[in-house]
Each structure stands twice: as structure tokens, then as C-alpha cells.
Image (cartoon, rainbow, N blue to C red; front, side):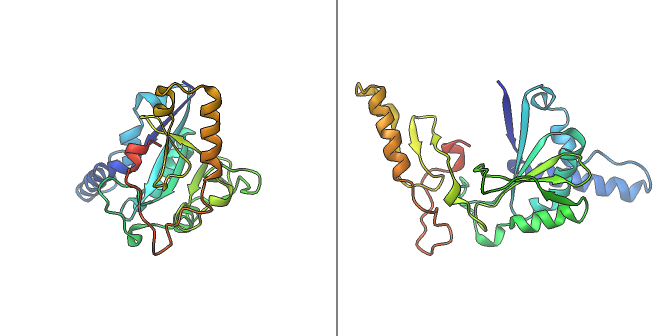
Length: 227
């Protein structure tokens, strides 16, 4: 295994409780060192983050969790881990997504930049990766920003997803998918699979349509799609 990724957005309640504990400690013992920051407490001792493999930590920046953006940035600076901030997308299993809960990537960048100045480290014109990368001006690491809602990058997206049950999706927000599993079970050969993949790529839409009034969220949540 050369890469590991952890998603932080499910741990909002944990961060909230740790922050409350910090506040109580500071009020009771002024001037004394409180607990470690929530991000370090939750992830600092994780076995995966002690491994030699390249590591990424993803944080979906929904309202309330955005308060911890500087903490995540500090984690990246102090550990050398790669932190990616992801705008809240309508892919949650609880279907609680609302535009009012989306924290624009520009807002997160501004919040971090006010503490530690940032500068661009990637060029969308030559790098099709979903994340726009930013390095800290003082050289202590970098972060990434995935602005899939407020500044979509569909025009340069080169990603396909293969789900755990063998379906190919050409967009996270697609409502159609092609089953490689069923094709293989029917006796298809490699050429048939290659043809299906090409057809799926050519059927990729020009955009995900989140900002379209007629947008229909996909039936599968992110946890069911895999990502």
C-alpha cells in the first residue's frame, strides 16, 4: 500500500466535545496548557498516520466544521501530512445537504491565509487533479482545496470511479452507471470491457449540474459510491 486516506467530516461531534473541554480547562486553569488541538488528538496517534505511506486527510468543510480549518492547516504544517478541504456536496447519506451549509473554498482559504499566508502550488491548466494545491509561503507544507460546488472543474475532470459492486461511474453525481460486473458475468472479454469504458467516458456530461434548478441528487451516497 502506497497511499492512505482518512475522512474527517464524520467526526464533527468529536471535535466539538474536545474544543469544549479545552475551553473549560482554560477557564479553570488560566495560563496552563490545555489538551492538544482536536485534530491532533483524533489523528495524531492513528497508526495509518505513522506509516511510511503517503497520507491524505480529507475534511468536508460544512458549516460548524469550518471553524476547525486552521486546526487542520496546523496539522498539515506540523506533521507533513497532506490535508484536502472539500466543499460540502449533495452526496451525504442523511440527505441533509443545503446550500446554506456549503462553506466556499475561498472562505476557507481566506481564513487559513489570515494565519499562515498561502500561495498557489498548482495550475489547473496542466494539472487535472480535483484539488487546487496551495503551499505555505514559509515552506512548511501545503493544503489542497476541492471547490466542486462553488467553482466546478468539470471541464478538466479526468476521473472515473469503480464501485465496490462493479459499476463504473463517470461522475460522482451521475444517475446512470455501467456494470462491469454484469458484463463479465455474461462472458464478456477484455475488448468488451474496454468498449464499455470508452462508452462511459464519451457519455460524460459537460457538468455535474449542482447549480441547476433541475438537479437531481444521485441515489447513491458518497459512502456507497466510494471515494
